[in-house]
Amino acid sequence: MLRMPSEREKLMKKVKPAITIFFLFVGSLLSAQDGVVTGQVSFVTSNNIYVRFENTASIKVGDSLRLDGKTGSPCLLVSSMSSTSCVCVPLFDCGAEKGAKVTFIPPTGQRKVVAEEKIVPSSLRDTVELAEEDPVYLQEIRARISASTYSLVSNDRADRHRLMSRLSIDADHINDSKVSADVYLNFRQIFDEPTSNLQNTSLLRVYNFSVGYDASPTLNLLLGRNINPKISSLGAIDGLQAEKQFGNSYVGLLVGSRPDIFNFGYNPDLLEYGAYYGFNTNSKNINAQTTLGLIEQRGNGDIDRRYAYVQHTSTLSKNLNFFTSAELDLYSKVDYTTKNELRLTSLYSSLRYRFSKAVNLMVSYDTRKRIIYYETYRTDLDQLLDDDLARQGIRGRMNFRPFKNILTGFSYSKRFQSDQQNKSDNIYGYLTLSHTPFMDGRTSFSYNRNESNYLLSNIASVRHSRSFFYDRLYTDLYYRLVQYNYSNITDNLLQHYMGADVSYNINRTLLFSITGEFSMYNDSKNYRVYTRLVQRFHSKHKR
Image 1 (cartoon, rainbow, N blue to C red):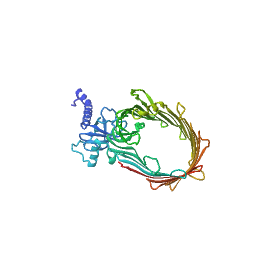
Image 2: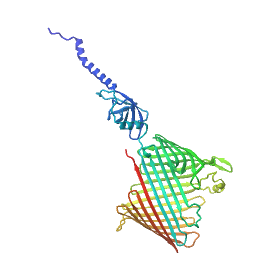
Image 3: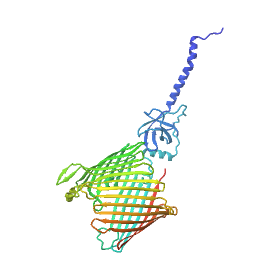
């Protein structure tokens, strides 16, 4: 007799598949979590993110990692690894920072974890472990050395002869280290006749001579003489400078001295120190940098000058460029009486707009008062304060390219001050043919007119240049006619200048040039010769 299944058996038959699926699902989750590995971001560069683990035996190149606290898909892709570290490429907008927690969750069906250490080439292991401590710095050295001579031979005055040389070195991360160097100096030797009244015939000027050290990717130290681009109006600084980055912001400190005002040498009596703060703005439509600072300068221990400054530069939508800088003095000392008065000593602003590839416009305005150092110029204070007028100026320039081979433009500038002294009006225009008909080469015509309190000048010139031998040889011919009309002289002074320049690229880094010029006015005849030899160097290590 066939037995019919009971109700309980029928229910178990229906539930059993669901129970089986449930336990398989839970088991898969437990299995997936069984290989979870946690680590921490140890270093961040512009291209890679380094993560340290206790052991990377369960991770393979190509696996993805998650940031703790980040929802959604994994955002780090493993590109290389050692036994305890992974070098990762950020995916999407990862935003990983040093110290952030990282999790690796093996996918379903992950291979069985082997506790033994992976066999990794020692070179890769060393590279990854080194990168956890320091970024990979790459050496790049740019250098330029030049020597030139200048000679003037005249029929009615003493001959003049000069020898000049310049050296500039920009060495970043020497030998792939954290150390950099910056050098810029020039030397001039004068060979005038013994009757010359010159006090110094040998002049050495050192503008930059410093060593930098990247203590970390966000902390830079600088020792020596250097011109800080964020406070360029301060000029050269002899001493120690430090700058720390905080994301888009930065803070800088400096302590040192000013170069000597007479020979530009080192003078520890001209102590100066200060601090600055700035921030960068980088977005799709604007790139900007703003710096605010406070500087105090001393002379023989006493306050010479104390002032605040601001410097801003920005680019809007790639067509509009704006720059401004200002200095505001905060201290004065007259007749032994000190005051904390505000005095605007400098303001400069410029705006450049590119309407199209064919038209661009630039306008600028500046106002400047004479800077007063109350200790250095203590005996001349009365005269300096009487002449405390703002010398102002405006300028506008527009360039056009009406046709492919024609470029033209004009500019107007005006200088003025309240007492009507030192005023000047200047008008300039030019026309350039980039391909001269029937002659080849480039031809330019220009005219300049300047009118001041004591002089009216008109200058017209024409210049033709052309290259040969695949641009290795460059020639330049010019003629310039100059007319001077002085207010205290009845006759106009007319001068003629004719010259030629030949430059030859001996190789890609070595250039030699020679320029000859003849000028005359009335019975005076002058011959000038200028020679120049330039050697450039460039060394760059690649990854």
